[in-house]
Length: 81
Image (cartoon, rainbow, N blue to C red):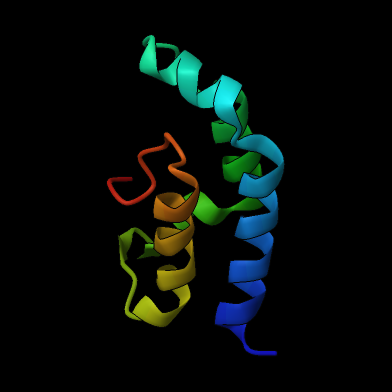
């Protein structure tokens, strides 16, 4: 299994467990998904698009995270962070 697959499996597991109708409805009402952000931050995935403060050179590692954000409609600014 390569790095992109490991990243994809991990972030998909996080979102599958945390992103549900209740979370999305709360977000639509203006509530920040703080617990989800903490989980993602603690896992380190908020940094997948950077390397030592610079944009990541390896988009292959970032692709599974970006895909999962869209698939689960995760209300987090990961692509922007």
